Image (cartoon, rainbow, N blue to C red):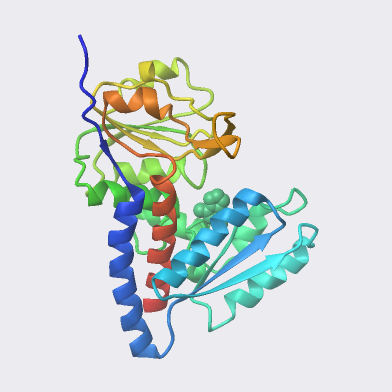
Length: 295
Ligand code: GUN
């Protein structure tokens, strides 16, 4: 029996454009009301190429929606105390609505200490325990950018989630764990029965095959293969990797945690990589910055 490839893309560029158009209108309203546009600052420590690319796309997105942005670059050998001083300055700078410190940080800096030092009211990444706790309790606050971007994507394409079995692969503080909470909330999108799978899960394929909605944030290229996905599942791929490819001019190609070509034909909906979750993370950061400016 042959299966028709009738999958649809959860396209983060298209969805991001629609959401960003609304953000741009709201930014103009903020500017006319208080005299200056929403302002996001981004701290980039060291010269990790991937982090440079991510921060670059955040700054560019700010320009596109009429936000002000400031990129604060610091050398990889910055002392933790100096970085904490910078965080403190940004916490107290009335010109800055919200800011992020791009992760990962160099090994000699304690990421937890930096995250805790960011004022919860300016934590537009939504990484501070106060914001994560507020999310858990359904109180207003800043939602973590990637999980909230995925929620926005599911909302935009009107993907039904209520009563579905959502399997989240990965349990990181910034993606897997908050994702599981958002999908189980009494909300739309939400109201899923959620399973969190991780590196110690036994017989992972048996779990992922139960997923109506499979969200993968495991950080391993092409990890999810066709045999691990149920026919008609919704597949969301958070991974982004450069893999060697001699057939490409650049010598590499970008792929996700999901083997897209093998999995897509069996899916109802699937995110491409690039152009799926990535642009939505940035969009979500803009939404949080707008919220900070409106407050
Ligand atoms: N590193 C990878 N993703 C993120 C993110 O969403 N925010 C920050 N600050 N660092 C990251």
